[in-house]
Length: 307
Image (cartoon, rainbow, N blue to C red; front, side, top):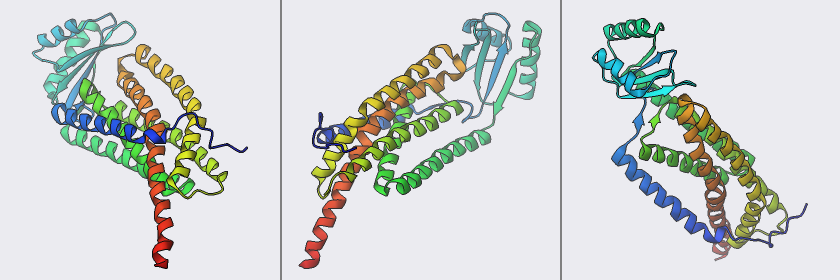
């Protein structure tokens, strides 16, 4: 099927500098927020103790705090989980001693007839988990670059990775602003968004490649811009429909999924919006700019050789 790349409803590439500037502003603001507030690391990445109190009845945050005060302990944070808020989740900075853990288990077992689940993470384990999470993201990024470079070309692979880091940084910045807990489920959400975003980007790149086949001559940036615009118009409806479908699912998880997966759901919602934006307005635009410069160099090389 032959696509007429000259019939374009909206010139995306023409407004590329606005998209880049918007992302740059977000990046600068995000960096400032991270520098000021930092991240609210959960016990998965910092030393701490988590106590899950199984009450078998509805609890309140005040009740759980009072129970720990009876034991001379002061939780850093208390949240509720379960269908009827029958689970109290208390988080402590630092690792509770063996005597304290034994006392907590005995107290709540006697009060509610169920021994609480207690998990601790030492500073060494926290650092190891953080290191492994970073390595996982790096390995995923390298694999994506290799795949896209082989499937398409290295410039598109590089543009895709820039878009992915754009998405990941935006999620991190929002979590820093809201001081939401960064834990293992957060990393799972980031890796999920990496997979979703690259899928959307590859669909766009695939359409660009198909449209380039129908152009007899692609020699200037204007030719590239026309192809990118046409490709984005052709994939826009698909991208919007897909992200809306997934957003509905993620929103349902956030509302009805409970406290345990709320972090995952929020990160997923932020990442879905950022991923769609970067696929349409960052990755393809960056590739258009870089490809245009590459073609320009090829045009001027013969002239230099002749001279």
